[in-house]
Length: 116
Image (tube, rainbow, N blue to C red; front, side, top):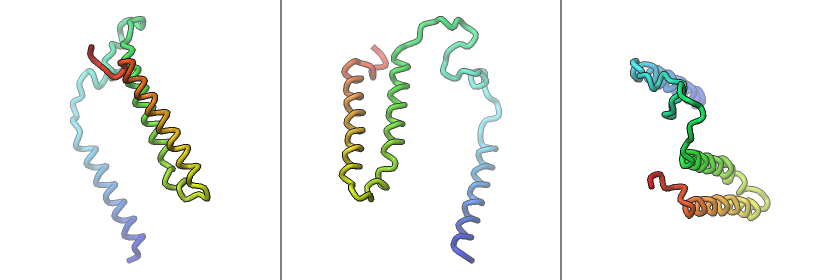
């Protein structure tokens, strides 16, 4: 058989096995919290004017920033093959320095300390 045919058969078989396992493996008795439209712990039936913790949003923004970092640095190995790889290195270093400075600032402001 052709190598590509074997790879396609293995991929298709593995996908079917993983789909079947993921269908039968999870628990079939979800609790009230999982059936709630909000899984973040806030009461959806209560008042919408309750104050939220600012630390919750700071941690969420921190996760978003580092996900953005991964998305921006993902094409770096392909950009290294350009005619001028030093420009690619410069922009990647700039992104990393800006994110590191943001992390240091948030750490200094106490945004990473969850409990007082």
